[in-house]
Length: 354
Ligand code: HEM
Image (cartoon, rainbow, N blue to C red; front, side, top):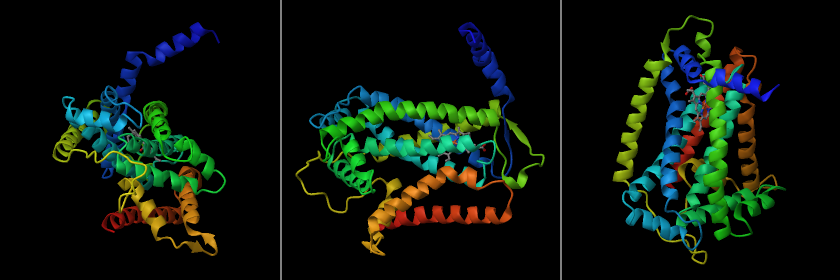
């Protein structure tokens, strides 16, 4: 095919008028579960907040063990509204992970991953992994005491995995210990590798949603369902949600400014009761509760392998739950989903109170 032909083909499909026509055609089903359709858009909005505030932070942040902490201190004390931008970036990261979990569980319970949406689910599962990596890599960047020791513990846990663990630990840390080399790496992941991968995957994810349209829950499949125009009706409702999110973010950031704490010191003892970010807490707490030996095998290793297995099974969901409509399988999936959700919530609370 000639380049000119490809150019004409793309021009036709990517022209403003074609995109406008696509948007005009898009409709969203209206039923009692429609509220869950807002969470993907909300996650997307918070991702955009992250990109914008992240770029602003980059104007002053300096990624090295000698300068990182001081540059963040400078941002929050000297730069006009720097404290606000940093606080919004940190709060929005947490809210994004929260809306992402809500979005994932809602598409799971609504069975939105059935054919032809398997790839939408798969791209989403990779996005979940990327978002968690964003959180983990960003946590180290202020180079404070808590982030330093949390990264030490987190990478240590990765290092326990048989065979690949040790090379992975060295790859993540840039050596055997958490040092300035780890910070440089995490900075590279956080501001280059992950944003590039996330942008590409979000584009694919949202294009797939556009291509297949919104799914309806299993009980409504094949029935005539009321629909709402995406432009302007649904989009305006989305917009109200995003304005509310800005309000919540501004309130959280202003009333509870993100702490910086003390500068990391590799020779200081780890602060007592160190805990990871809330979205890692259920795994952290599980590993703390597992007995050291189970049937002669290392309990921690078994726990980590079990979480890896669950992560892998997440990718298989659309391929195991098919063909759709089997009531027994539906029950098993619902029970598993409810159990996973309750487990995450209960272990997170338990992790906080102990
Ligand atoms: C950065 C992360 C993510 C963003 C920005 C995002 C964005 C979106 C958006 C805007 C939609 C359309 C509206 C909606 O259904 O809420 C959507 C739909 C969907 N997402 Fe995500 N998503 C993300 C992560 C995930 C994850 C982790 C999963 C599951 C593992 C997932 C699975 C799906 C599926 C299956 C649909 C189709 C829903 C339907 O047709 O009813 N997404 N996503």
